[in-house]
Length: 361
Image 1 (spheres, one colour):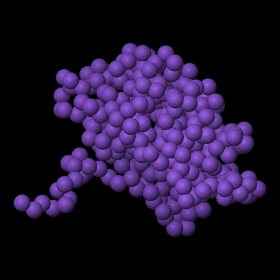
Image 2: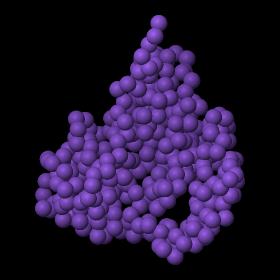
Image 3: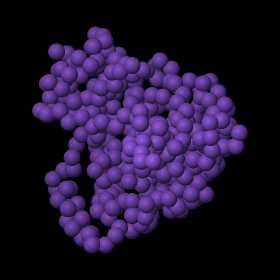
Image 4: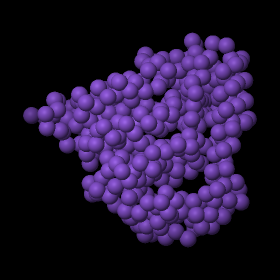
């Protein structure tokens, strides 16, 4: 019997929306993707170009990213065997779910479960469904803080294989208390808890120091939020026993040679400069948050990331007016916990002023 090709698509993927990346024309301030607002200075970019010219493009990259691995291991004070590299953190999320997707005995539905608070990073949901597992979304409170009691009930009843916690959270910017995550980590040693620290440079807090005593903890980092988003370099820090299954399915050349060389050179010679630039964004975040808090009818949620979530009555109409004025922010205004919400990435001072001008108009 002949079947339609679309009938071969797994049922759980048919209703999944594509991750949309809007590109309206006439945008002067792109503040929708949580990117770092400042490009490399011309002299630094030229020096980097000379370094990258030495890369042998006819050869495959180092599949183990050995030089970059050694550097990152020294930076975090861990053995190189405690690291796994990915094409951004998105790939690492997918690899973790694929590697640890065996259904638990006695858990109904015949699928492994992947837990995360909601709303949070949408890739957790996409990767869970793509990996043939069952998302277990635990609603946040109205102020986007953790509902610890609901989380504990979900952990006990759902018995998830993996639990993802974005610290701080995207899109809300919330940094949930360290002690609450650490308590879950200790109480549920048979669940792999992933601390997604993509915005750690802006938050200044980490669970990295808990790794030694908790073999079920994995700390995930990325270079994307410190001005190197185009490189797509992410990494996991975890016990080698946890990384072993993941390494078996990791594509052998998943981080390109140019990407490795750029990351290695910038982190080796200009790490302090990259950190100093992050501090300028943190200062702008506080200025922007204060200005938003003064606007009537606008609720700005506290943020420890490089973005701010706001809530207002006419969110979609305001989003369109901002676009018409050359400012692009992320629109979450649809039925659900983020209805009436927009998320603005902290840009340059000029971009932020353009956004505030549009908000005041």
